[in-house]
Image (cartoon, rainbow, N blue to C red):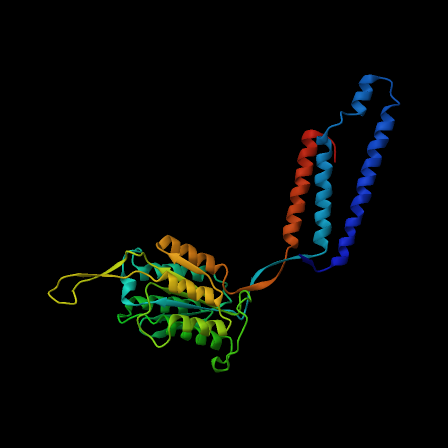
Length: 335
């Protein structure tokens, strides 16, 4: 914690003087009590000693201490939204995303989770959307206009994506799009420290299968993100027993065919580990929603300071109220 006006913390030095004054008054009351010879009067003037009678004054002093701290304008370390931050959402739209092991379908669950993410991510953070199957394509350029991203998200339902899954190429496209969003030249890429928390660009990557297409391998794409200092948060969507049912078999005859479409969590976990991101294994719509909500509250934010004066004043008010209530209940006089 830091302070805007640290010299005002010197007001805390007044608290020991108040304690000494309280002790002095208590001792004077005790000396005054011995001048009475009537035991009944003495009992009324010198009440029974109990720890309870010291609790209200303690709360009162705590309130004063908190008010002194509030005068110094305290600031706490936290994550704050960055006006220059960009989050690139990457969603697999290959044919396997129509599997129903995650309800209503894998693609439908992903679209619903992204909408929850858009509600939580700071409004001043740019969000872009890339859809990929055999090759990546930009569904929505990075923008603070959430409706633009939502329209791109809705369009994913109409993409006739079969082909395969080009994870490495999609990662490279996300890195380039993110760099352009913050004014970096992808051709002049320099090595950056991935240990930096919450950099200006983050990638949220969702896929439900193994790489089957593309020029770059998944780890080659991850190396591009690492070199650019961009963490990739990956989500493996689907269950190991997931299958894709098509109305006609590959051999014809109108016989439905079931094709196993298990996700590839090992590869996506390696991508997250390489780039300094985090991996999520989403085997249900609820788990997927939870992951995107968590990331929506984290991505697009950078370490910073936020003033905590109001919080400290609120605690001081609570301490004063506690002092008043306890004083009225345990000792019918001011602390």
